[in-house]
Image (cartoon, rainbow, N blue to C red):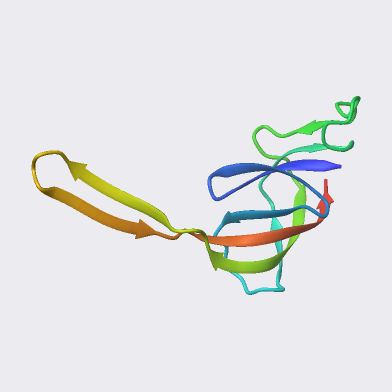
Length: 111
């Protein structure tokens, strides 16, 4: 069984036991959270033939569907370097950014 969820302005295809990194969510490591913005639930495994049977698609969300997850890390991603440069103008600006993220482990899908 897998589901398509929406969090942090992005969509993710998840199955039970999957680990994924999403935009920062409130909570501490070890906490359980419920993701209620579920767009689709399919009964088969990801990529399995015939998994379209029993497919539930929301318009745009499925009512009453939820995905349970456990927070396994709250951290910052790798550094991204931003370098602005204008040739022949003696203009150089260098800065960096590390995006906050939450690592989740999917524990259950209920639809």
